[in-house]
Length: 80
Image 1 (spheres, rainbow, N blue to C red):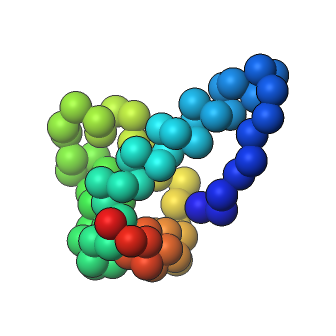
Image 2 (tube, rainbow, N blue to C red):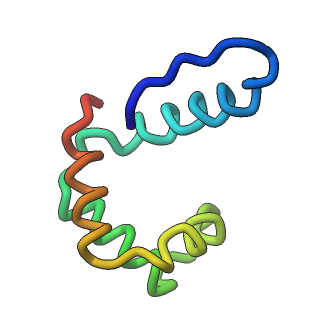
């Protein structure tokens, strides 16, 4: 995810979103691509039923396998 510069109070929500995204990515950054694809696939199929699965399901339900592989490659390339 590209870095963003946020200025002014009108961008408060954007700043919060960036901080949340960075925190979430820090937990999966550098993981193996096959692990990430498997997790996305399981969320999509409903095989994951943990606390965050209800939030993930709508996010991943429209992803193609190609999308999942691309996301996995990106996240795996990040420094943990």
